[in-house]
Image 1 (tube, one colour):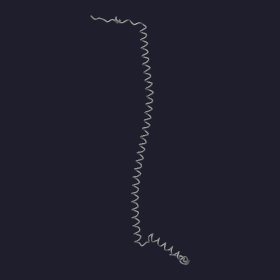
Image 2 (cartoon, one colour; image 1 turned 60 degrees about the vertical axis):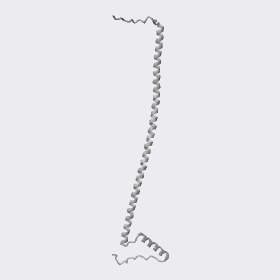
Image 3 (cartoon, helix red, strand yellow; image 1 turned 180 degrees about the vertical axis):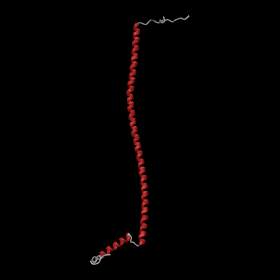
Image 4 (cartoon, helix red, strand yellow; image 1 turned 30 degrees about the vertical axis):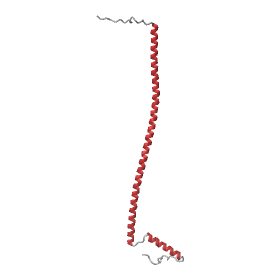
Length: 156
């Protein structure tokens, strides 16, 4: 046979009085209220610290961005300097080669003019100096006048 347990309290326990039940309810409600307030406090603290943490992350991000931009600028400056040095070296080499080519060209032209019997610039300079010296030595001498065509003759 199945026996049923009764829902009445065991015999060794006293039945609760209404005053004890009210005190337990008040204590339980106070505990629940305190737990609620503790949760709200934790939420508020997390929100405040979360804002501070977010602001700290933004600040760290700005610092990192500045650092990387400075590093990138430094690298760009180094690259620019290297390219300028390379361009200068290439320009110097090109200038040297053009100077050599110019010297070779001048030598060949001078030899060709010499073979034709034309005076060089140095020859003309020496001649001019000699002429100046002669004019200083004899100031009364005048250069011969250019021939004037006679009025009756026609020029060829």
